[in-house]
Image (cartoon, rainbow, N blue to C red):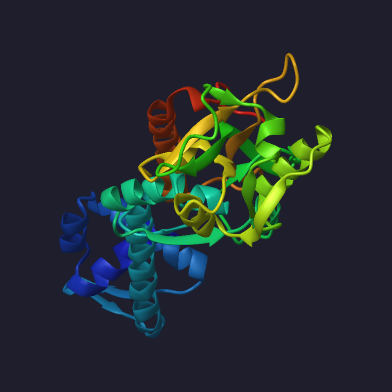
Length: 319
């Protein structure tokens, strides 16, 4: 039994005539007759009483008719729903991102995506990178923007680096600069009063590790703050903070200075921003468009941030 046979059956039942049904279906009458005969053979019963004056349903045909109509309606509903999904008229994208990315890159991504595809339902999870990977693995997310500082299992995730971003020292634009130079030494930063992030932040772990490697202990005046609070406290002059360069965009109340390399021959303190998805799940159309929107937004951010941010260069990688 197939949909074409069921459609032929429904039309013959509607017209009570093979010739008129064949015309409606744009079929030759012998072809229509063969389809009905094949359907009757498959079902093991006669569906029509055939006579010169027309064709009428048998008891079996009367039983099949409402089922056939329902099956054809369901098939059309599936076809329409898939067409809507492919055309991004319906659907859902579940995106995860770290807190520092949620107040910068993610805001741009979601704004651009929603403007183009307002019917797509968006869900956002704001977590650290490790938790986001757990949510990806558990099927709770479609995509995640993470900072890839640790190895990510290539057999479980497809990870595409987007940006390499320097960490910079920020201070209040209303206060004197923390240095007269273009960069500041790590040891000099340790001596400044600092606003320190919550221990749940990937950024906190990275800066703690850098200070420990340099055998330095920073002077913390406030510890455990979230990103929005850190930026506001620095604007008010409570201290300085080490943040990703990206968060400085469109914040005139802050000034920044680049960190000098932590050791000769090394690059300044930086992080790689990547987009991750489950390796064993083919992305839906809306998810694929979101991935392209993220890439385009990352490129625009790199251009705006200048020397402190650059494109990762690789299109695919598993770190």
